Length: 378
Ligand code: SF4
Image 1 (cartoon, rainbow, N blue to C red):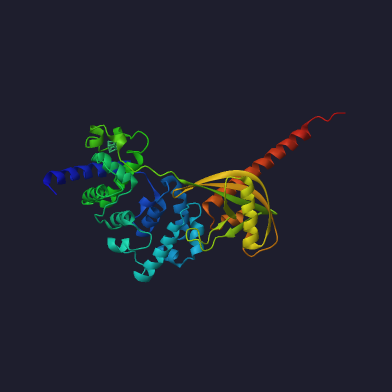
Image 2 (cartoon, rainbow, N blue to C red; image 1 turned 135 degrees about the horizontal axis):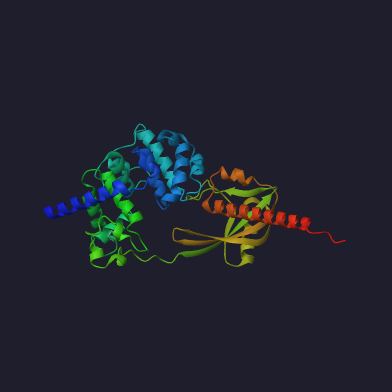
């Protein structure tokens, strides 16, 4: 690296570190450099916002306070503690990696970046974050926030998710991390992207420590960068979801075999079309074929929309009456459902059903009170 380039990076590092020391948010995972805690936070933060992660992170660590406790747990216990965060593959990988650390590293989280990268569910970004934050190693990080800051700072055009620009960005991120306090430096870059160099809205350049160095700002290119590839239109799917109740309990099934949601509980559902008659037919057929149960499907209660990995799924929630007995399904009270690993959609649907039934009972009791207060005609 040429002398002027070294100077440039030194100057950027200095500004970023000074800004981070006064402006960083107080977040629970920043109170410790324990690799287990940092690792859990990094995995939870993938595809989930900071504010949403905090309560789950604190609850998860109360349940599994150490890597050993996590490694010894049953997978169902880990999935239950993860309930609400979604993307359960992350929880499964975290659990598997904890068992691998116990089996192959005598329970000691490895400090070698290559060994960290070799653990299940850990990619280049997470390995860089753990290596720099916990072990003070000059390893770079590159996530969506850092990509945005770097492409704007250096006015870099092209698709940042593909070579050659992605390689260039990793090189620049490494040049920044190669100095003192690489963990703070990496967190400063991520923090700047999350709180100042914002996507979609006006970036808060006046509060940015790098405004004098920012080439996109000088060249009027901020809104064009980064040049992310256009998202493909999601594939639309319709599913019919059966909500059957019996004396205050709800019927759920456990998923088996499907790799992504294997072991989780959910309301029984069948792929269908937009057509109500076809939705009902799919459910009746599924109950009969899978569990030899009778099913009478009622009206649609509401539609819950969920966007998952390139798919837009419309879940048509239908009341159902189920007759017969089967080992394949279970009836749970809502409080029992909360204790189990359920799919994110099931949790959201159940919350809405409970809210609706509580507001219906409130309206009924208000109406009853009004009618009892009305003067009686003589
Ligand atoms: S000056 Fe503005 S566009 Fe440039 S890095 Fe800072 S916040 Fe981002």
